[in-house]
Length: 384
Image (cartoon, rainbow, N blue to C red):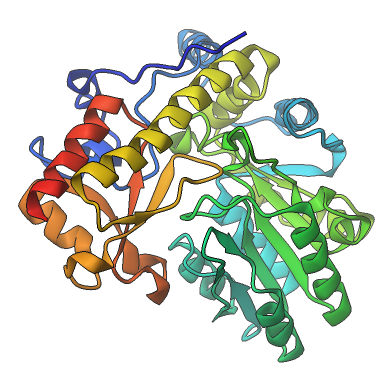
């Protein structure tokens, strides 16, 4: 049975939102920079939060709000991954989880690999944990991107103690293969390194691609890895603060259990309530409808760029609602998003923030209405 794509809210309603996407710039700017989507909330989430407000249920998050078991059910349904809920702890958000795990597994001054271009907060959370960023850029195959396993091996051989993986990858939307992830795990094991895998975009893997949780890639991956997940990107819940730290081995589970109780206390109660509803089977149809809408938009963007900005280079992503677009041939400098915002009143994310490999690029959030996406690209085309 075909799925009816989810419809984005009208821009008049969206401009009533108080989140960063709709408040950073004035009403004359169309925002496509931050990873917030424009869809109505999943009904199960709306019902759960409405009930909490009606009850005045605004206190502290309990030790077991049920999110771990809910995520285990979600992972089994969506990824075919058997997760032990007893090996999960919650915290405030994905970046906080990454910092706390890294503090346990690296020593001050240890190098941590990132695969650039990559999510900008990675460059900040590693120093926060006491580590030093080591860039090993993705390999451009001509049709997509892959991990540079030889480069990662060299980094581990040179003393890097961990890799902070983005799986699926932000901003390229790359879904790493099971074989690649298993090979990465073997390298980490060979050099005594660990893998921390940010899997926040995993629920948004599109048809034609298969998401492999790092911890499920191989028995070795289960031993050397930590996964950090959240409902926040797939269900637009970033402001509610709930992420999960997942392990699959006794040793790594002990590391996460050794984190201070305060790390878990930082979980937002509304975040836990919303995540419980998001990961429930009741929200699956909503997620499928959103994926259908995003699938249309990722293809639409390719058509729009071909029509209005033909020199742009864009590969349709395998996951998520973020597009990585190379505008270098337009001659608008290393940071073309600045010109676009000033002259076209369209706010894209700044390519150089993702590392030097992002020079000449922009990141575009297509989790919006087709009409809004069309208008944005048309405006950019008027500058070319």
